[in-house]
Image (cartoon, rainbow, N blue to C red; front, side, top):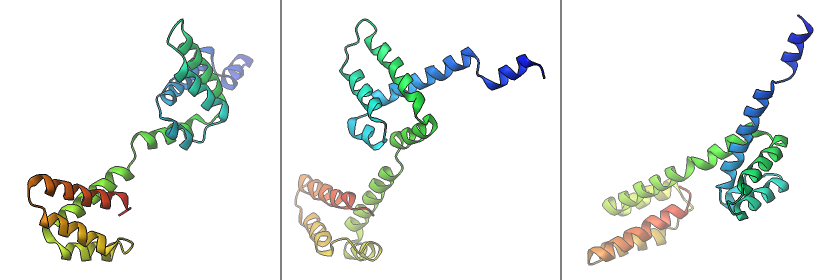
Length: 166
């Protein structure tokens, strides 16, 4: 191999470095659109969190936000971007929440149709649930007179089942 070929293998080209910098900026832009609680869950370095907060505070005049995005890209050179992308994808498409709400809706429907038998099955699967509370919610649903009351009690049952991990 010639000396020129060795140099190409060791160092990325200028255009490759620019592409990587643009990817870092795009990742920084994704961070700026997250809520503060989501940002804290990512365990980012303090200067990066401050940079994101500064971006959100800045007006979009005279290129201030563009410059701040470039700064965020610079700060992100020091963190593992692949791990951050994985964490962001988990935040954007959480698998646990929809499954939890689907299970809660399924059990709520089952309790409405089958009554105490469904409550017993649910308690066998999830002993941490409160039998008395479940039966009371079911009883209130059965006693509800008009459609508005039934909907209110159905929502209460669903809310109770949703707040407890099933």
